Length: 499
Image (cartoon, rainbow, N blue to C red; front, side):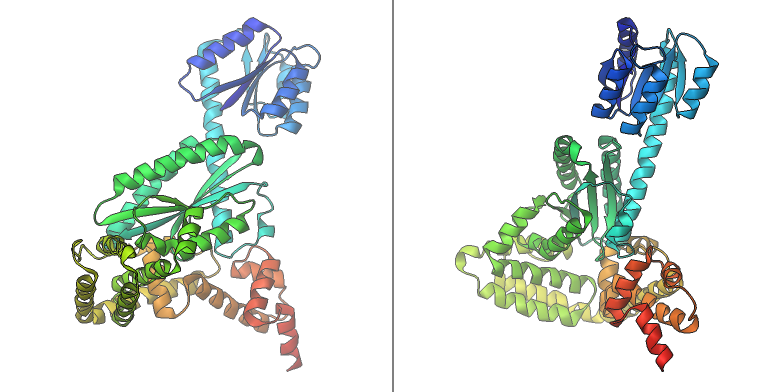
């Protein structure tokens, strides 16, 4: 928490500074002012979270200085210092939102209690701010808001990290591990990014993959560069800590983006390139420019990575026909590889072993382990019937939930947790069973309900229909409706009236 101290007496400033530095609280004494004018200028430049200010100062008194400084630094918390308990000043201070009123000489216990109370209030505001940021960004990613609905957010710079998980553990154990890992990451960000102008969020993307978003005001770019570098080191250390022969995480990091729309585009590009991890030499944090390089360098290898990813998804969802088809495709791709690229096979073996319980020997030649994968596929057939029914029962429950709660911010993460599986796995099963993605199915349900409301309630306003369906703005609802039906809600109504 950044602090400034304003008092025309040097010894008072020094005493308060020394007492603050002895507290076991993360504080930065950012500046000292000896008069009201200095305080106003310093507040505008430094944007402190907390300011101690003497009532009686030269040039501009404390109350007038607070009144002026609040306009340039509205989030600063103010504590008044005074040699007497002046009721008139106290009343005005309350009107200005001053947090506390300390009598001089200030003792360490009163100062400590005051700072701890303000720090608790400050941290509570940070938590609420980040929760709101997470809610808004997740809602935008899932299509419930458009950029105009996010006007309340400042002009942030954005960066994101996509988290990909590979594991052959049970779905419930995978869910437990990834949730624990993400909680440690979230706790780290809460402590490291303890600033009003920095935001962070953990969201689930439409395909069920987890992602981290960080955002900051442009003036904090240099400070954020350091924080992002430290965050990357933390992510890599935790990936190493949690990594086993049955569980591994890969992180893919975006470039810095000027807005949330650009970041979502980068997430989509990284999702499209995420299968490269099947042929990459190591599990670690990869930058988007490195992914771009790998894709541009050899498209054949990139296609092999996509095939390997589809094989794993088919195996884990017991889709024998797709599994068999993709194994045949992989064999053809490997046979076409030149000899100097055969080392790609080792990376593929590692990838398959991670996701399919160490089925392959690292020393096997490609032809032999392709045969092993085929044998493994034959074992899918006996279990497919029972698992197919279990999967269908699960998806039926999910569909019932969507039909009952389509107007809410339905989260695939929330539903996956409820059924003790990972969001990514639920996304794969849903797409396989329903033929559309989870998010598109919700849109379909909402659009069918929109039709019913437009037909059954011809006098109902479009903005009320949008709200009832779970959209936060009528303009966004109209855009989605028009894309889905080929006409706006008003045009749809007019067509009905003509019939």
